[in-house]
Every structure is written in structure tokens, then in C-alpha cells.
Amino acid sequence: MSATLSPTPRTQLTRHRERGSADRADLFAVIREALVCHVGIVRDGEPVVLPSIHAVDPDGPDEGGTLYLHGSIAAPWLLQAPGQRVCATFTLLDGVVVARAAFSHSMNYRSAVVYGAARRVDSGTERDHALRLIVDHVVPGRSATLRANTRKELAATAVVAVSLAEASVKARTGGPKDEPEDVAAATWAGVVPLAVRAGRVEPDQEGVVPDDVTRRLRDW
Amino acid sequence: MSATLSPTPRTQLTRHRERGSADRADLFAVIREALVCHVGIVRDGEPVVLPSIHAVDPDGPDEGGTLYLHGSIAAPWLLQAPGQRVCATFTLLDGVVVARAAFSHSMNYRSAVVYGAARRVDSGTERDHALRLIVDHVVPGRSATLRANTRKELAATAVVAVSLAEASVKARTGGPKDEPEDVAAATWAGVVPLAVRAGRVEPDQEGVVPDDVTRRLRDW
Image (tube, rainbow over all chains, first blue to last red; front, side):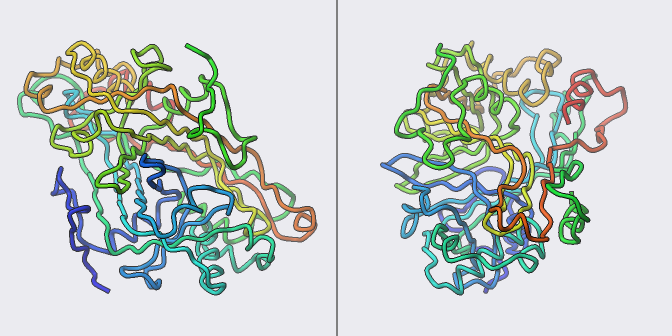
């Protein structure tokens, strides 16, 4: 697998190309850190965008690695997706850029956009692998502590794969980029860093919080 | 304006209808709290989803209120959007639901999905209003402290409006919903609440952090 992303007409950045990255490792890092993605499909000729949890397998069977999505077999977008083009977008907000002029206000972020045809995952082995990856995406190590899925649960779950071959990655970092004449003025400017943080765990029962959850809390 | 959302074939929830809200106030609350939305368009018959900042005007000129989006006039998706259908989706992550079985793992969230035709905003008055709302969406009160946009800045900026008439709102709250036989087992379960939090402000210059930024920090 190539370590770099080759732009296609879909993924070639048109704005702020200097913010782009061609490093596939940056793509995996954004997808791994994002807790949800926003999946776009075309339904009756119109766009539909829905939030979804996901997992990534850099060594998955699809070119460039595999993005896995899942959901209820009763979810129309998942039923419709296989064979069709989808777009999955991942956005990590890192801060608000407070500038001296309205026009220079911005956000610091890392984002990724993946374009591909959805493939329905039918093999029991790959479905099991994908569902474990999705649980472990949210809480690493969790799937090994859980009972196996029942046949009923598996029958109710649709799994979809998307190749990561065609993707773009973009990031903005740093302070405001005001015009020199604005910097000379008295208006304050700076960055408010933002991050997702965990609050106090709300146990559903007595007992010690397990290691997988405790380790995960350290990221937040 | 109706205080309730009337489902259409597009917005009728198909899964977990009990999580839906028909209260328009809930729609505005989700859109107001979200720092970015994910906008879907159809380009060459295929879905494209891009992150965007936004603002809402419940009393805007469009039925149900107005969602404003903006960007560079060089951004292809904004140039293409007017007259076409778009879907704007807002997702607030409130927690990770750690359950006893893989199948019962979930997320707590509030989300909104808006479907509408994009309208290009041409009037100078409405453009100015929308651009102020967008700055104030991120840092309330900020726009009043800034110089007016220059003609050059305005010429470089496209503003698009979407009616909020057709939208759905959904939320999940509370703990894991495991099957009774799983609750009897020893596996720990609970919720890890998540929220966006601000870190220490990074000033671009000396001087006192202004009131608008200080007030905003209290939300995070």
C-alpha cells in the first residue's frame, strides 16, 4: 500500500492547498481519533448526511485500507448503500481562532474526506472482525472482554466497508492570520483550544471501572 | 411559524422513533450548540460531505427559520449549491455508552438533520446580517467589537441560506440498555460523559482577554 495519498479530481483540494497532507498516516490518525463520522449518500437524487460510528483497518481487504460502518438492517441508508458511492467525512475541532477582523476568524481542525463505493460485508469472519474493531474503536480492548454476538444480534446488524484509496486530509493550526493593518489596531486576537473531555464516569452498577475504560479515559 | 416539526418522507425517523423530538426549540438548540455542521451536496451524481461553520436565525426570511452557511467564492461546493438540494447535519456527542454486550454499546448524542434547497444570499443587508450571525455563533457578541467587512472581503465571500422547515431532531440519553440476562452477568457497564472543553487561551498579543471571549469560555 502506498504511504501517500494521490489526489484525484474528487480529492484535489481547491482551497487552502497548503493545509493538505498527502501522508496516509495522517488519514488513519484523523479517522482513529474521530468518534463519529458523517456519511453522505444520494437518495432519490438528493443528499442525505447521517452521523455514524466507524472503525478503520489499515490492512483491510480494500485498496488503501478499509473503513467499516455498521448499523441496523432496518436503517434505510445502510440497506441502500452497498454498491453506491458514499462520502465519509471526519472532523476534529482543535480550537476557535479569534481574529481582529470578522473575515480572519477561523477554526483549527483536522479533517478527512473519504470517497468510495460501499461494499456490503457478508462473510461471517469479516463481519465479526469489523464489529470487534468498531467496539474497540470507541473503547480499545473492550471487545475481548465481551461475550460473542448472538445469531439474532448478527442477523440484525448490517456491516458496510469502504475503500480508503480515495481520500483527502486537511488541517489548520496556529494563530490568527490577520492583515498587517489589523494587527496594528487594538482589537484582541488569539486561539481558544478545544478538545473532547470526559466527565465523571456514571456506572450502571456497583463494581470497579475496568481497565479498558480507565485507559480510554486518559485520552479524554 | 409552527413550534413543531411536521415529519416529511425525508425526515420521518425510521429507527428509534422514541428518540425523536417534534419541538422546533430542540432543533434550534442543537444547531446553536454545534460549532460545525456537515453539509452534503450531490456533485456529478455522487455525495460530497464537507464540514462548515454556520449560524441560525429563527426569524430569518425562510420558512421555519434560516440556516446560514458561508465560505470563499472559490469553494466549488458553495458555488454549486444555490438552487440545489443540500442536507446539513449537526451532531453533539454527549457520551459513550459502555454496555455488557457489544450489540448494546451506544453513544449519547443530540443530532439534527436539515433538508432544503440552498438559496444564494445576494442582498447586502442580509449578507451583512448573516456574516455577523456566523461570527457571533462562535463567539457571541464578537461582531459588535470588530471593524466592518471591506468591499474586497465581502466580494470574496459567498453566503448561502437554507430553510429550516424540513428537519428532524434526535437524541439518546441515559445508561446502557442491556438484555436482562446480560445485566445478571459480571461485565461492568456505564456511561462516560463527553463534552467539548476549552484549554488555556493562547493570546496572539499582549492585553486583556476581552469580555466576549471570557463569557464564551464559561460554556466550555
